[in-house]
Amino acid sequence: MRKTSLILLLFISSIWTATIEAQEYKYELGISLGPVGYLGDANPQVPFSTLGVGALVQARYNINFRMVAHLSVGYQLFRGKTKLQDTRFPNDPTLKFSTSTILLNPAFEYNFFPYSDKYPFLQTKRMTPYISLGMALGLGFKQTGGVFFMPGLTGAIGLKYKVANRWNLQLQLSGMHFFTDALESGGKSANTLNNPYGVAQRPWKGNDGAVTILLGISYEFGAKTVECRKL
Image 1: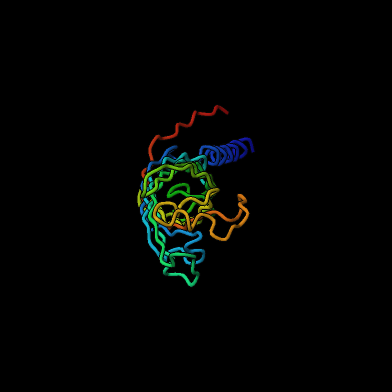
Image 2: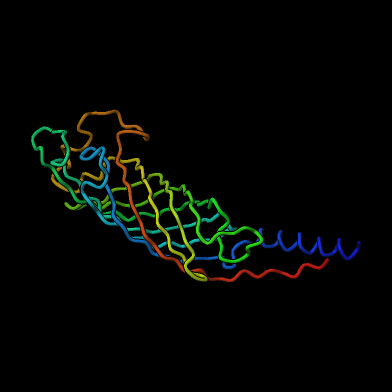
């Protein structure tokens, strides 16, 4: 009986250790690339009607199998053109712009399945969907010169797959809402598209947004050390 209790205690301890320590490696570094779609006064409905491009570098901390904290720095090129929409604006119905941004994005990620290619007794999966929420802080650069501040919120859904030990593939659809209406100021449209309908500016409306599709790869490092627990 005593031997059985000891074995049971060891088993419970191993599960507890694996759950708390979680990932085999603490950190990840990755890169992602993909198209960027602008949403705003020049294009309120169809995000990829004028394609931009985005690229980011991401540092991740694996808290456990399900939770990840990460920080990314990304470059986005936004393009817009009113000619593609039915809406017409005064003076010039074919306005267009091109604006680049540098954004810092701290975020928290949750995996729907415990994510790992090891520890099958914990029912881990090498592929999992996930959701992510975070903030965006950065700068926009006008094509005509000048810089403006771009705060915002981000949200994402995605799928990641562990192709090999330490290596992960990631496909993500994300949205961004900015607390500014300045993306269109990157061209001659600056005056016309600066709140053309005179809508009262609020943090939750009358501002710009974006949708991105990113494909990325990441590499894990920094092995976690588990101290021997005396029983």
